[in-house]
Image 1 (tube, rainbow, N blue to C red):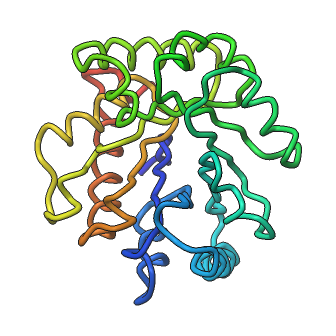
Image 2: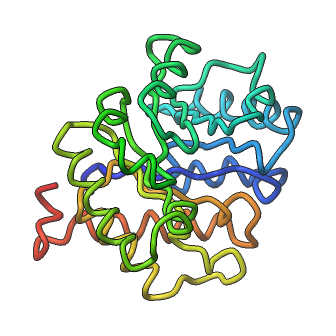
Length: 239
């Protein structure tokens, strides 16, 4: 089987603690582990970071670490390892990405999260100042009219890919799996369409952070991504 191109981001939280859940999530296909201050404490994240380090020692392909920075909650990550990726929440201007870049080492990827109208309006400049873009459809869907969300997502997707930047499609991709061991058909189609559009990564949030079925969610995500990438009818095979 050929290597999967679309990365899977799994957010860790209470559901990922203990019983080797994090280790299993990684082995089931999570390429990037996301820390979100909403789902844990500094002590918990330190323990999870140590576990990721141990897992990386036995892996050929390193699991990357993503810190999700929210205004006023950055201190939770102070003193921890330098992340591979930093996602900046509610980016409205390019200056936010530029300021964040100065805080981290040169090798850290800076991803701007587009979650509000101002971010959409200033998108071209934000894109230029960033290494990648995360389409945060949850908060963005509250900032713009719902019927416009698909159009905006496609526009952000196209511009990001055309500029050769890293693209993450996020929020509610397999949300029903917070409580159910299987996703809805609409969710499966959502993941597949993100792959067909050329997303660099698809993200799990509540599903793996606080859901009842974190391992199953990663397993389903990997299966749908692999199937979509091999779908020659759409052109996924040439992605």
